[in-house]
Amino acid sequence: TQLLEQSPQFLSIQEGENLTVYCNSSSVFSSLQWYRQEPGEGPVLLVTVVTGGEVKKLKRLTFQFGDARKDSSLHITAAQPGDTGLYLCAGHQGGSQGNLIFGKGTKLSVKP
Amino acid sequence: NAGVMQNPRHLVRRRGQEARLRCSPMKGHSHVYWYRQLPEEGLKFMVYLQKENIIDESGMPKERFSAEFPKEGPSILRIQQVVRGDSAAYFCASSPLDETAWVFGPGTRLTVL
Image 1 (tube, each protein chain N blue to C red):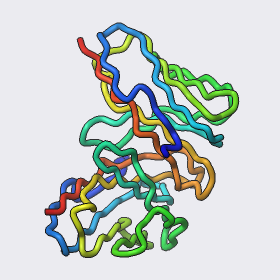
Image 2: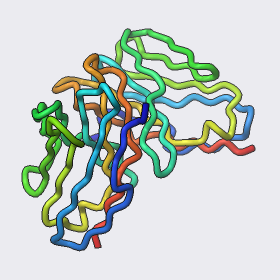
Image 3: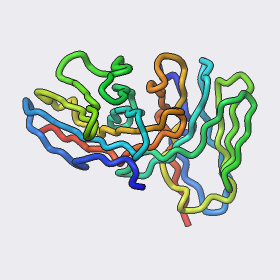
Image 4: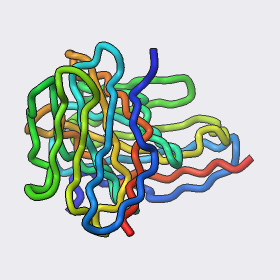
C-alpha cells in the first residue's frame, strides 16, 4: 500500500494549458514537500507546506496543503515545455526526520 | 557553493562484487540521507546520518548494506556481494541543522550484471 498516492500518473498537455496534480493519503502528515525531478538527475525541492490549509505560490505554481494535512495539490498556470518533469510529493509522518515518504510521482509532459 | 556531489555517477558491478557510493554534502550541511529509487518505484528511505553517527537505518537491509559519515570526507554507502536486485539509482541528500532545506545529489546509477 502506497502511503502517498499521486494522480494522475501521467499527464501530457499543450503549452499554455493549466493543470493540477494531486497527492493524497489516508494518514496525517506533519509537513509535505513537492519536488521536481528531471531524467538522470536528483529531485529538486520546490516547496514545503506545514500548516493545514496553507497555500504557497511560486511564480506560476500554486501549492495547497489540505485542511486535515492528508492531501496536497500543485496547480500550474500556463504550462511551458520547461515544466516537463516528474513531480514528486513527500511527507514526514513520524519516525526520524530523515525518513521522508515519497509518492511515485506524476510524469508531466508539456508539448510546444 | 557546490551542491551535493555524488560519485561515481554510473557504476557497473558483477554479482558478488562490492559497490561503494560516495556523497559529499553541501558546505555547512551536517545531515546526510540516502535513498534508493527502483524503476517505476518511488524513492525509498535507507539511512540518515550525522557526522560519525547513524541516526536512523530503519530503511536499510540488515545484510550486505552499510553506511558511514566520517568526521572527514564524504559519506559512503557500501553494498557487499551485490545482486541483480541491487540495480537502482541511489540518491543522497543533505540538509543543515534546521532540517528543512533538503538538497539532493544527482545520484549514482548502479547496474549489477
